[in-house]
Image (cartoon, rainbow, N blue to C red):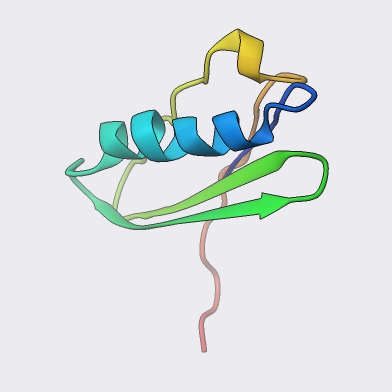
Length: 81
């Protein structure tokens, strides 16, 4: 899971960067099963990726788009219904 907060007024640019730069870099990677992009208040963008095997890191956006450093978390699926 990858989450970034945009610099003031730059949420749309950050969202566009995820679609135009981050996702294309991940597409076609071995083991990538699925991606989902979410937006939230505070000009935040969240990217969740599902992998079979070791995930590729999501690149960092240009620094001028960020209001704070990117946050990253790795999870292991334990139960699905």
